[in-house]
Amino acid sequence: MTSDGLADLLATAAAHDMLAPEPSPAELRRAGYMPREDSAEEEARSDVFVDCVARMPICQAICCKLGIHLSSDEVAGGKLTRDPDNEYLLLRDEDGRCTHQDRGTGFCSIYEDRPKPCRHYSCAGDRRIWRDFDGMVLNQEWIDANLGGTGGLQLIQLEPRRPRA
Image (spheres, rainbow, N blue to C red):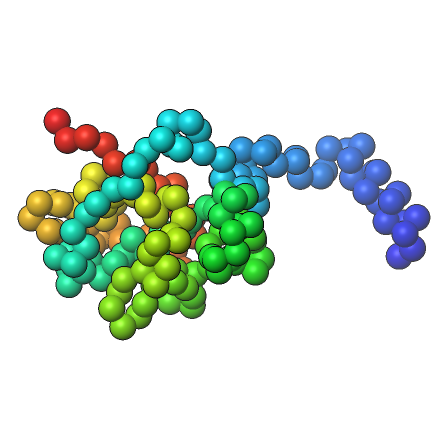
């Protein structure tokens, strides 16, 4: 097909409303094709501490399987390994885990330079991860259904830590 033929085909498809709609900027951002933009409130939030050493034998750092969106500054910083198909997503290896997770210890190999979603995320209030945070009981059903292997849910919006009542 010549380039003129392709143009005619696209024009005909558009005239009959057969083309997929353009994704909105919000959809592109959510899918990781545009940089993450933090609000002033998110910028002001401090790092969150969870005693990962105590939890690691139970959770095996399952949070390292959560999809992480990157900001323009994080991409420009050059310290993070990005997905080759999507520069605003942190790369995950074939096992579904972040490429920066040290497989020997389970901990982050770039802890001081980790992206903001990792700094602000706390599994303490995340019912997807913990059925009972204090009792260290995982929500294994959700984890198996959504984070098993390399399949399952590819992108997960991290929720900020909520104060306990």
